[in-house]
Image 1 (cartoon, protein in one colour):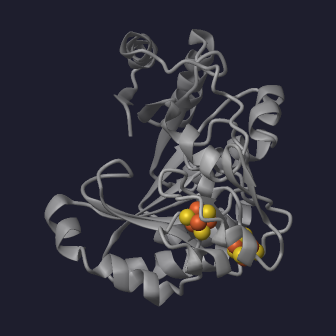
Image 2 (cartoon, rainbow, N blue to C red):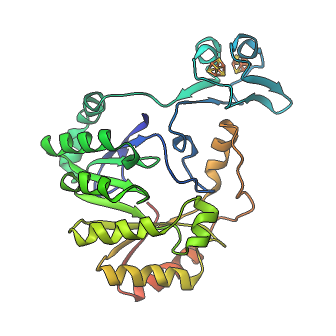
Image 3 (cartoon, rainbow, N blue to C red):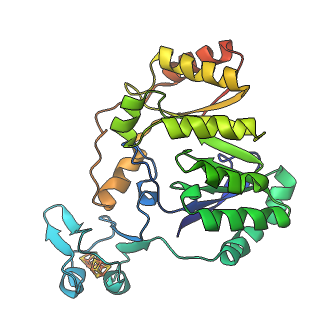
Length: 296
Ligand code: SF4
Ligand code: SF4
């Protein structure tokens, strides 16, 4: 299930890349910047700015999943079966179905179009999500075919999949972009809805097996930006012999996506970190001998 194929990406590994976003993630991070990739199933989204309020969709939905409210069209996710009736008839394309079943060869045909950019920039193809390794069969086959075609491959992962999945993709991955959101289990369970132990275990496991890893930390003020916590992430990297770390500042641009998906956005009270705050945290890691990058 593919959510999107983003061309000319410069934030998901070296050079110019095509990033393939797979849909579905076992974590539920409260601040997720891509909430449209959390569910494993297709979803309908409503764009308020395009809607003219004709209510054709509400009348036509065979499952009574749409309701007109003062805030606009609300989608009942329990009832919606993504039949596409409403998206087909909406005169202004204010409703859209997210998520598309694609074969490995179909996705490869898309990324092949930009081979020249990868070759000239030292780029390649990145598998992202959601959690791309949750779709094990697709991921293994896709990455294997990418290597056969000579692409540099990267996988952007939360680390929250069984160890055996990493073992299956390892021969075909040149670089892992590995997220660390929080090192404490209690906080991890609270905000990510999952334990942290498997993530740390898998990180150690793939490093031991010789994988190249860049760490990525989504920096969310008041949740994981305490200097001591950042220092602990640095210490873990030193222990593992890792060098590259990317600090990704939390931003509120995703809030509109939550509204479109009729999902609650529970972290609107959190302020975006300032450039000075980001630099202070980067300095802590630099002093630990790490190569720190701010942003994707
Ligand atoms: S059919 Fe489209 S334009 Fe009409 S109410 Fe529904 S979403 Fe809005
Ligand atoms: S996709 Fe089908 S079930 Fe879902 S809201 Fe639209 S018409 Fe109703």
